[in-house]
Length: 275
Image 1 (tube, rainbow, N blue to C red):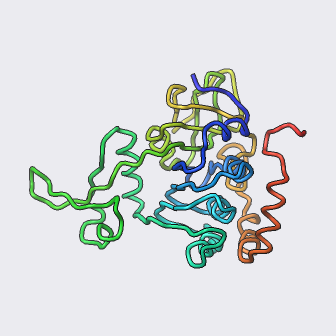
Image 2: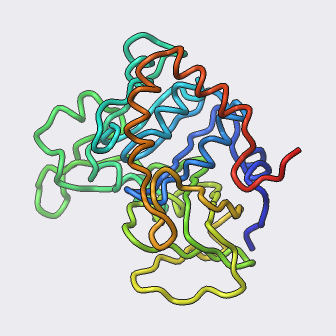
């Protein structure tokens, strides 16, 4: 049974310096609160994985938490660039950042292989490109049945995957719905899994299109109302578009970002009692 703990306790126990960490969520249910707690606890030398790194990875990288980024697209959705990631890649501030870039299909299939316990996955999507020459996790294999050349991608098994969801029961079974990305696959591929949820309930009521993560694949659950903001949580709250626009101004300048980071580090984690 998954443990029900505070966000502070969950991050302290599950996320370690040097870990490979995936914080997944597509368009909504992005685990911002958990990412902010990782920043507060000053984790370092992380390899961050995400199909679509946006604001939360800009913040983690700007805070000096990461040494490497594995991704398939990056940007501030609908607004513009990620200046903290750009600064880390081009100028090594606050620390040098290595990158490993994939197509969406490649990275999704890497999670799928990890979830299935297989060493690699096979797809057609990258055949004929230069990715195998530049990305160690991408190679070319020949089908033993047809002779066709195909792309092989190495399995991805994060040390810890973090996702946000709408609900969990008190045994740690998790329920999420709306647009889903690779949350399920990323959790199943990981050695440890932390799920933050909008609320804990006594019983999960069925919802159309739901994804249920059973308690035996989840290490810890933390109740964190608003834990996906400023992204949205379907059925709970809307996307804060102003926050995404404001991030362009905050992140563009190092001093402005440093002031934002100082305020974040002083603040209590969402859902934590005051001291």
